[in-house]
Image 1: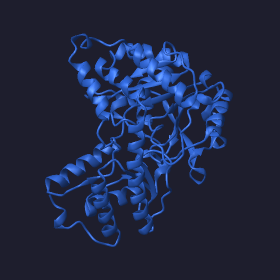
Image 2: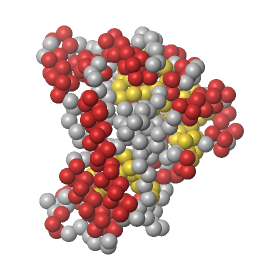
Image 3: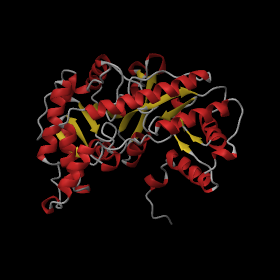
Image 4: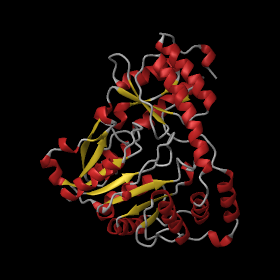
Length: 397
């Protein structure tokens, strides 16, 4: 007899954890592994945010439970950010909810919105947590096909009408993890119209919304007239302010969805530590120069890696957002086989495209969230690997 639920037992292994185990085995042998797999920023949290946390953490009054919906100050800071960044007006009391990171919010939203058997349109390729969250909530994942020839925009016209009748929710993610794809407002307009036609609600994951390059500014789906009737948007301070471990994010938009999610959350958690929420206010009220500085670093890393990939004859598009590069596997190898060889023979972890869905086959993802010196070392190893070389003893720790 197993004490684990059927849903947990039937959940496939999280591929990132599988590669982490292989990484540990190689490190135990003395191999210096460079991890370009998981997208966790290596840059430090800005000092002014850390200082706010420190000053608040020593106050006894901040050591109590936080309000279930988050502090009024944090929700008002999110609303002010949306007004300034997107010219979108939000009611901080009804259209903003504080999250313990956007990943938590997306997972809990499944219990708030779908019933067992309900369908959810999931981008393919897409962030693997979408699929697992739907699975754990007893929903049915329905692949949302994306067009690689047009920048991975949704191909709504290819959706099976019978599947659409089962669907209640559509997930979007721009700028995209893993592809780095970005969109303009017309894509969000099409999505909103499609959702209204087929009685769907939308959750747009904008975790990388501020990680953009050159003159590109990622739009918000809430800028579409009438979007609040069907859509919510998830945001996070993790990637933009290097606050991954702090676990602070938000969801904004449709009042009914946010109310339903708040009910789920009030029964499952008690909110983020008050000093973290107050430090989040400081981040959102800043001039965002720290975000721009981060983006400059990521862009330089991206250009270095792209040049190396192109020199190796590997196809990859220059992204306008995220700190990921989505590249084609050279030759006829599978994504998984190529990634395993890269780890075993070059000591470099890359993520096979199949970690993100069936349509990821033939691609791999590189994360630029490692120090520039280490990224340069990874480039040299990849070039040696591509030329037929193997990891030598000089790469042992």
